[in-house]
Amino acid sequence: MKKILCAVMTALLMLPAVGKAERKVVLVTVDGYRWQELFGGADSMLINAKQFGDVKMMKDSYWKGATSEQRRQELMPFTWSFIAKNGTILGNRNLGCTMDVTNKMWFSYPGYNEDLCGYADDRNIHSNDAIPNPNVSVFETANKTPQYQNQVLCFGSWARFIEIFNEQRSGLEVNANYRHAMSKNPTEREKFLDKMQELCPKYWEQERFDFLTHEYAMEAMRTRHPKLVFIGYGDTDEWAHAGNYRLYLDAAHNTDAFLKDLWELIQSDPFYKDQTTVIVTCDHGRGDKDINAWRDHGPYTEHSHQTWLMAFGKGIPAKGVLTSGTYYNNQIAPTIADLLGIKFSPNHEGVGKPIKF
Image 1 (spheres, rainbow, N blue to C red):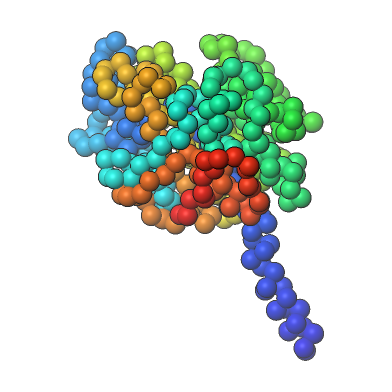
Image 2 (cartoon, rainbow, N blue to C red):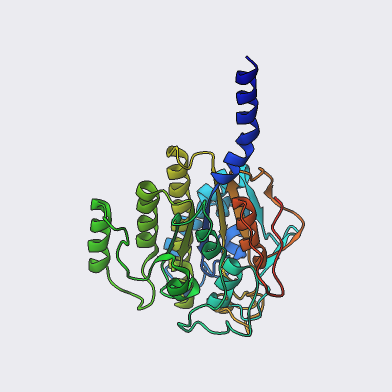
């Protein structure tokens, strides 16, 4: 009897450690998506500007509500019906909560470096050129631990993720731009996606449409069960630079649908169900000072350092939209390491501290 009790007690004591080791994390980024639309829905000035798209089409889709709360629900229904009620959202400056990048570049490569490595590196990362990242991301660090080795996958619409993750040095598998499925034995669905990608117009040379990135990631999660996943969407930024506000809004709406699809996959798969934390953020903001400022970002575009973050799933309290607090993108990588229970101590100044949700 004593032996049985001893065995039971030992098993119970081991449960927290097992739970920690089984934690899964998905980091989703939405390139250049403004906090203004996230928290307020479609912009009243931009949606009425004929030069940015068909006004009737935009209003029919995203301007039915009388309040900004109703309009943000129209734009991102899953975010406001589920994430806001079951997770935590940072960065609503109108309510007193701020989030910003700490780098001074305010564009993509420096932003993703900060998100993934935990610090700004303006000395080395000051362009979007195809230069292998000298810094080590939390994804690379995780991939070198016993519990997460070969359990890390990265997906991105933008070609530059190959260099941002420094695929050659890190050994990470990065399915970005127009790469085909990278599974050793592609599934029938992956073969279909490869064919679809070849037939789909390559509208941007360095970036594929987000729906392809999303479907590659979902199929890999279903069949290969990685424990740490990166998904980088980019349509929002591309359509904003093109000055097409209708398609920018459509891209945000589609991203919201991707998040719903992701969560449904997670909760329907025993490997992920109730063991997975999802973090959603961006790499930079956009301008807002005049009618054309939303198209751009960078050190000469005021307010494009302003960002946001959403978290939901395992270990995230249902606090909703925070009304106070100051947060930074350099906290994202340390937060992921903290959730995974791995050591992540970059030897660099300006490393952020984990967010305590």
